[in-house]
Each structure stands twice: as structure tokens, then as C-alpha cells.
Length: 269
Ligand SMILES: Nc1ncnc2c1ncn2[C@@H]1O[C@H](COP(=O)(O)OP(=O)(O)O)[C@@H](O)[C@H]1O
Ligand SMILES: [Mg+2]
Image (cartoon, rainbow, N blue to C red; front, side, top):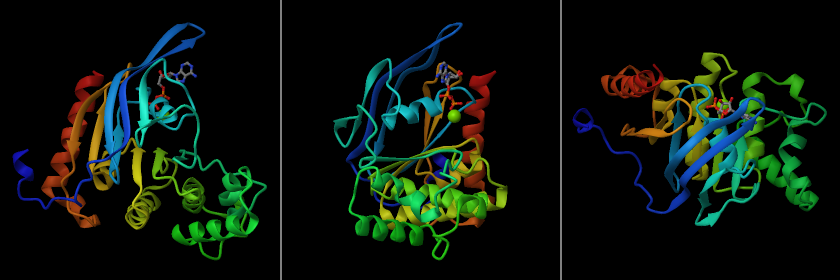
């Protein structure tokens, strides 16, 4: 795109694919018949990239993420993670963070973060050390003994991110993780997430409804059509990193946001 010629390129791109989705289709068998949710979705997420998926409600974003996480099986098509098929949940390869923090209310923040390690019977000391490191990474040092009801919405999502990262998976899938937060907390969390992403060199696939959030976070944005979901556009976000709040006021930012909006609007009419 011509108007991006003057913008500095983001971090060097890796050629290895962290996730490769090929010809993925899915039909739900509902009570009222079949619901075609995804149709021939193909996409590649390069290792270390931050890829954001946007699209109208009900277009299959959550379904797609669940399939990438091995939590739901697609009707047809393949998903490879680092070249190997995803056939079921494998938190060592793919971590997941959902919209609701979905923490166990009877466990402390630290115990919630440790939980995936304890069900895998990791040695106690290693569990504690790892969970402590994740608590620090998400900026919650000193809050480990708090219960979820003693934490704010933003803090709960931080715990949820720490839990998604505790097994050190190369890929982190995030389904509208900040949707329930107020705007200011949401911006702070986005910024924090970029810091964590930078420090840990993860590959992130992130679903959001917020176009501003999409442009602010992404290396590239994938736009999906209304149901049955297909990928209808792929937009490179060639804004320099680290991203700053000031960038949001620039023309380039506004034009990128506008292009995504036009795609979604045109295809949802
Ligand atoms: N378990 C299910 N059974 C039947 N239909 C479903 C099921 N889960 C989702 N759907 C339908 O599939 C479509 C895609 O859903 P979803 O992946 O949640 O979309 P999104 O996350 O983009 O809002 C929707 O029309 C939804 O109603
Ligand atoms: Mg969803």
C-alpha cells in the first residue's frame, strides 16, 4: 500500500510457520439442522508473529481458535503446529486465554497459575518456581496469595495470561481476552501484553472486536467474513515497534483501521 511506504518496518520476519491451517471447514450439527461455521479457511502464522483476527459476531472466530487449541475437532482440513498436526489439547505446544478469566474461585492466584502443571504432576518445587516467575512476568508480584474475588478484572486477566504461559508453549491463543475490561484497563493490558510478547518471543493469535486494539497490537490482521467464516483480507500493520499510544492519532493508524472497518462492513451488509 502506497501510504505505508514511509513507515519503518516491524521486527524481522521469521520464515518458519508456527501454525498452518489448510482448507479448514466446520459444520455444527445443531438442533435446527446444520450450521456451516467455517468454510475453507487457510492461513499461516509465522513464528514469533502477533496475528490478530477480526470479524463479525458469529463468524467462527472462537471455533477457529478452539480448533487450533485442539479443544474442538474440525469437519475437514488440517492444522499444523510447528509442522505437526493438532489432534487434541497440548498445553506444552499451545496455551489458551479466554474472554472470561475462568479462574477457580477456591484457588489463590498462584495456585490457579500452577494448576496446569499440577494436573501433569510436575514436581512441586518446579511448579512453584515456574508459577512465581509467571506471576512476576505479568506484573503481579506480591499478589500470589490473593483469591480471584480479591482481584480486579485486569488482574484476573493477568493471572489468566500467566496460566496460559506457565507451560511455556511457543504459541498463545487469545479469544477476546480484554473484552470485559473498561477501556483504560484494556489499553494498559494491550500494552502489557506486547511487553510480555516481546520478552518471551511467543507467537500470538489474538481475537478482538476492537479495531483500534487490532491495529495497535498486530503485525498482521486477518479479516473474516460473516458466517460461514472465511478469511477475506490480510493486512500488514507496518507500524514501528515498540508501539506507542501516540501512534493511534496518526494518519497511517487511522487508514489501517478504516480499511479493516470497510472490509467488515461491506461483507456484513
Ligand atoms: N456447539 C455449537 N453448536 C451449534 N452451533 C454452534 C456451536 N458453537 C458455535 N456455533 C455457531 O457457529 C457459529 C460460529 O460461532 P463462534 O465460533 O462462537 O463465532 P464467533 O466467535 O466469531 O462469534 C455461530 O453461528 C454459532 O451460533
Ligand atoms: Mg467468539
